[in-house]
Image (cartoon, rainbow over all chains, first blue to last red; front, side, top):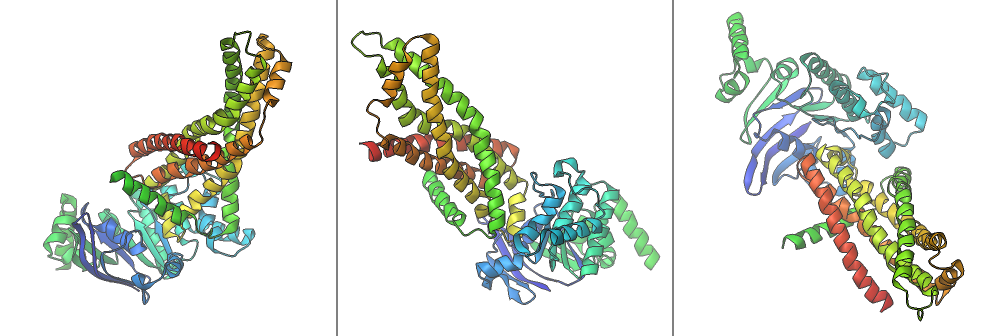
Length: 255
Length: 246
């Protein structure tokens, strides 16, 4: 479990996170939503250690991040997989080399063992014939899948995804969503996703956290998000007419 | 104050760079890649420029030395001295600062803005050590070879130019290049080269690594990197000359 307690972060005197507390459970797909500038990305970057919080505690299965020395922090990071918004694949490396990279750095395995693992994760993300291609030769959806494959190749305990669906068509976005959910359940990973995509939120968001101006406004599941009267949720999630109608229909049906 | 902040940040960066590589096999692989990218791929331009500049220096000296009291072997002497003492180590380094410096800065800068460096950090990799140390080692070991080649080709270019234009005889030229030759000059040139190689690898890496923004900022950082690397090379050249020759 990841426990976040009273997380606070500011940049040049401007507070971005104002005491966010929450928990993330194993095997559950958690989603962080909120408007641009609400602090989602900063929150995620604090969780993975790319930003150092000004105050607050982040605890990974009992290990307080702040209390770990550099060596222990590096070991913890080897248990983390991250899918970046743009994929963040290494341009000069092929798909196979990109995925093999963490194994080369941290696993004491022979080349054939590494290759087996690479082929296994590529198969897992349904990308079996792309081993020798370079990132520039792949579509956006394929790049995201390679990024997911690289993130899970070390069998991480924690998976963080920063807007995994941005720039993808609805079909590919659904494929990526389902893939992340399946992986989370199959390997019992703690998954935290930053998303703007309400379709994803409704589909796979077993736990949803709404951030507004650096404050946690609401927390609940994708079932509860339909019935909540929280003003911030209603204004953000149901800002489009389509979603408003869907919500009304859902509420009518469940009455 | 702004410049002081950058100097401090640069030295803090170096502290992270000079750490033990996390995996030697990966470091070795990166080192060979950098030798190819930063060294071998510069061989052509260095050979081309030094050969022709050596020729031009010899022709210019010959054309400007028309007094019968000045012996012709001084053309070889002047070409040799200018190639070894200044042209090969200093001006080739400025050329490399443009070619290699912009490459280092833009490649690391692009990795920064496309979150590839963040991806390394999230994996638990010391990104500065992983990206910059192989570049420093590759340039510091390979550039002395490159500059030695530039010295030889420069002097050879002068010889070819003289024999083709009949401005001086090959005997005069060969006598001139051996006249009062002190092997310490080569040592001096190579010491300067090693220092400049360090500058060429680290200043552009600094500009690329700390870039913020998008492609426009990467371009700006690349230009800044070339400018600052050249400025530092010229300043260090002055101090090193004072220290090593005066």
